[in-house]
Amino acid sequence: MASIYAKLTGRLTYADNDGDEGVNGVEFRVTSTSVTLGRRGVYPDATPGFLGMCHSKSVSRAHCKVSWVPEKTGWRLSCESKNGVVVDGKFWGKGASVPLAH
Image (cartoon, rainbow, N blue to C red):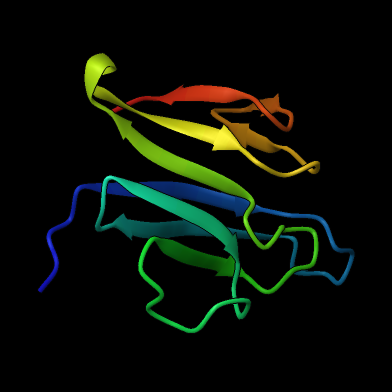
């Protein structure tokens, strides 16, 4: 069994206008010090360093990256999508790097 470094929990929200724009109570287990979150089905299941979130085209293939930053002793989310991300209710655009709370 792989070690779990972090657990991402919350609500997954996306906009593709097909009636299923959000999922409550999501949980992703991070099993490495860096993981890319993106559209499910782009890479084979169990691809190291990748977590597929949903099938929506509003989620990029490589939407964002969550990484452990040792010098900050914390996790950061880097937005890699032109669609942006929302963290703790605040929108962040492509290129933003956001500290994640423990």
